[in-house]
Length: 198
Length: 154
Image 1 (tube, chains in turn brown, orange):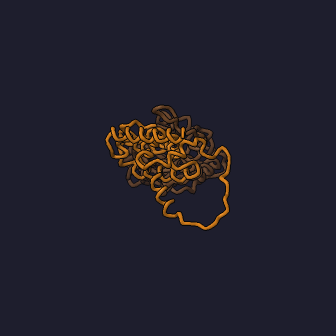
Image 2 (cartoon, helix red, strand yellow; image 1 turned 180 degrees about the horizontal axis):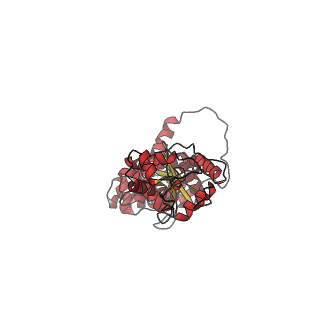
Image 3 (cartoon, helix red, strand yellow; image 1 turned 90 degrees about the horizontal axis):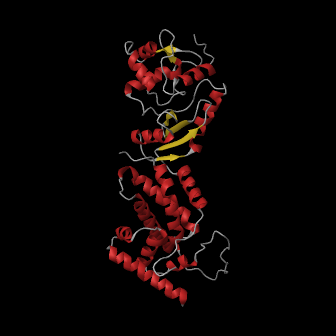
């Protein structure tokens, strides 16, 4: 203590970090998220109490922070990093990449998709492991056979790639066209599923 | 501009809030009050656009610390002859004896000293938290320090 100052109390920053971790693990946020490593790059998984809202490639928005800013703006900024709450997502993804899982059993929160996008994504979710469909067929299943371009856009904006297998949708003449995370990932996912590309 | 994820807010302010709480409620109670502080902050977070988020979250910590002392006072019941149990010794105990003495100061001086020196707020920010003038905040901190100095040298 000097004439007009009092030194702040000393503390162990590890204690503050532990308190913050405890908060993030237990507090009821609107969105819990975690970074998930995968053979095709780091993924940002974010879930609400309704289910998985997004599984984004971390490099999609110039890094994980960009993905998280987007989720905060679209859903809620009450977001905490709580890896334990996303254990099921991590486990099912690991099983998928090891070839031991063909269908995901995760509850889905569709609120990051538009109304039309949801119909397209749900039709896409019905394409079985190891098979492919076309934009036109998916559009038809969603109730509008002429909307194959709109279907392409909706799949390009798929907030939950891999789990909603938009990589299984290709062009009508067999070309891969595009993919949210880059074509190399579409190829890698189809190879995991044993799809032989023409 | 929408608010960034709350996790970033937590990461940015956890050390400041922790240091303030170690001084104001002590190491042992700090964790509970820390949880309550950030729970209240997270509830209010989407609606708020604080110009000064650090001052805002320390205001919440200050109020939660006061709640903690009120609750402790309510719980405190007179006890009979309990054996004297020495406080455990170790690195977890508050290391700075002077911060123990701060608790004995009159309420306004205590708040001003805690917010200014453990919270590292400016006198102007302390004034906003306490709802006083900047001059009053400065005087409370000054009087508090003077009293501490008298006790330490007595």
